[in-house]
Image (tube, rainbow, N blue to C red; front, side, top):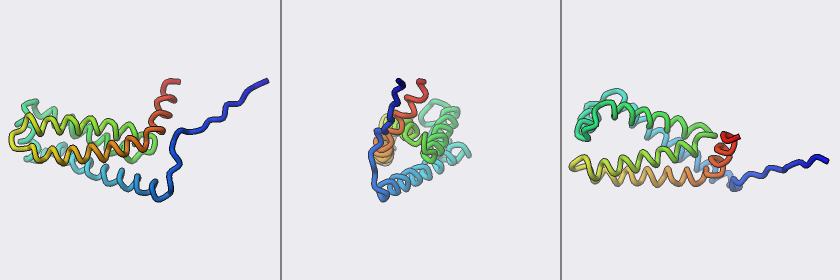
Length: 140
C-alpha cells in the first residue's frame, strides 16, 4: 500500500493587499539597488572617489556594483527574492560598517544603509518559507 504525502507550505496565507504591498516594496528596493549598481559600474566620479577612500581598490567598486545588480534582479524573481533580500542585508551590514569606520564624514549615510537593511529584513522574513522550500529543493 503506497502512502501519499500531502505537502503543505509553511508560507503564511497573506491577504492580497499584503502580497501586493510586499511586491511594491521589493520593486522599490530593486530600483534603489539598480540605481546604486549603475553608479558604481558606470564609474561615477563620486563612487570612484568613495571607493578610493576605502582603500580596497576599484575592483571592490565593481564587485559591490555587481552584487547590488544581482540582488536587485533577485528581488524581482519570485523564487529568488528571499535569498536576494538576505544577501542584500549582508551587503548593507558591510556598507554600514564601512560608512561608520572607514570613510570619514559618512556616518550619516549609515542611517540610510540601516534603513535599507531593515526593509530588506522585512522582505527576507516575509519570504522565509519560500526560501526554506528553495533550500530543501536544492538539497535533494
